[in-house]
Image (cartoon, rainbow, N blue to C red; front, side, top):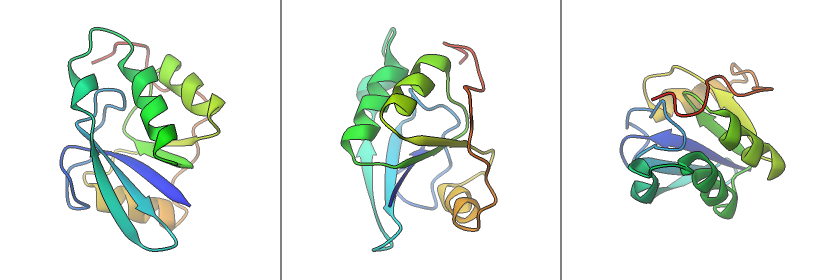
Length: 120
């Protein structure tokens, strides 16, 4: 299974980015191989609109089954749900801590967006 996480840097020790659509990077962790890759999301960081939906499309193309982020707005949540990607929100400070919480089954799957659109 592939887990995508929002990040402010390119490795597991990076801060978790609380924003989904405007996250600086996505880190995709493969739970089977225990390997990860980072992907730049700079094209969405300063997008006037549509950042969440475009980010959702990118995460889907990366093959993610799960998304772990700080917050997810309504349009992004809908796009992720349509792609079959489960969303988990957390306030963990780092990507590694967020991932560890998920792997220990300590995160709850979101059943709706947790912020309004354009909240940040």
